Length: 285
Image 1 (cartoon, rainbow, N blue to C red):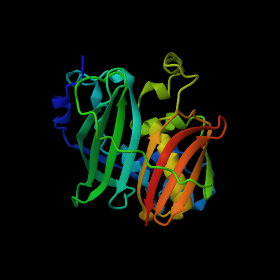
Image 2: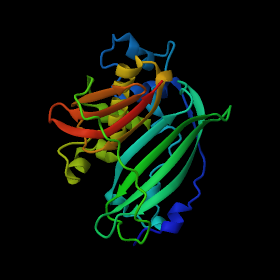
Image 3: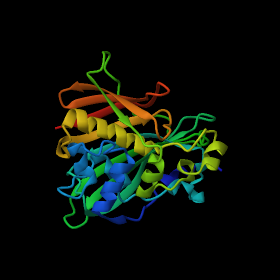
């Protein structure tokens, strides 16, 4: 069954309302590795309820509509889809406690051709319910490996951000816990690939892998630490490309280039020396 372009591009998503608590914000921060050093007072602001702050990257788990590509009427071979890219734009600093509404839409579907897959672009806007203020815009690219050749548009995919052609300005090393994926999944992504060793080995991995968005959270932490001095109000946006999985317990090394308000970055796993996030770009205030 081929992708039904018209049905998918015109699908009307129901708004998703979510209440989140101080505990939810703490759990998210712990899931992406914040307070690996529990005596670090800058990090403790995100994992302790006194004068609590929310990580900007937490926007990715707010008012999430679920894995909608499993709907059979879309015609997507959902078993073969991968999360290719993710973007976050922060319009108003996220509160540590909130009531939000998310509105999702498909913005485009690019046909890469028979045997080459398709790219599905989606956007989610997260609003503060009480004020109606826009908190964040989230953009995502899904690579549907089994769905090329359905007859859709063939052009329009954005080019990835190009990293500067010089040595990086700084490096941030952040460890992940062996149980990191088991903690992060409590923020809403219960895919057994990240918890059950039997599912992970059947999928070709040696063990459960860390969620891609948890790795994004570690990159966001590195940028927040190095370029924003742990001030969430200075963190305006980030975008990146997923290139390889991380195993819980590995160390994520973020290389950072700073050019005024523009920050470029990529992430490697120290233990295997492979790039796991690439073409990263953030803006700061």
